[in-house]
Length: 232
Ligand SMILES: [Zn+2]
Image 1 (spheres, rainbow, N blue to C red):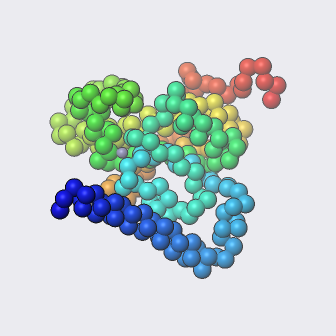
Image 2: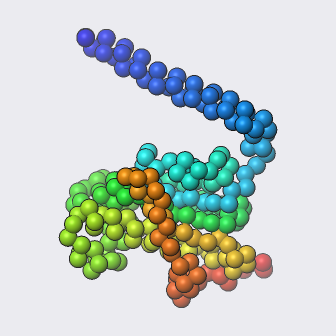
């Protein structure tokens, strides 16, 4: 096949892919309406999700699907390696909005084994603009250096770092003023740490003791008192 022919077959393939998505969309709409004729009317009237899910952007971990939740039931934020850096305006805005405006009852940080982000952080490679992002994971390693250094098996080390990263990102969620103040007032949201296993599709609850983690965090990061100058 000449270059022009190749180009034609690639663009044909891409167009077919695109057509498939829109056909899927129409089939999804039809199945939803068949189940519940008022589905889209309800969907367009507003959202009241109980869950905020913060997970990895990995294509193999579709948030709604693994939780069996429908459109409207979970507020989702995804990035590489499910990180919650306090200078990231995106994730911080998501948490603020979910807690203060949507009044979510649960915040889940969900990592997954075989995470490419965690894998990259464990390798000594210059990844360009990804370096400062991955450094958040390397900082988790430093916090648990002794424990992780003792694990000889690389796959096991990777798995443990995935879990510890989830734990530390949960701590980062709990460090926010929005979460602390809402919990003091309403006794929610509760923060959970989960790991998804690509090998069997199961979610594992790391069973974070939210009350105790909150207490230990507030020794240093307590922001319950409210905004300075605020009369609220
Ligand atoms: Zn990942």
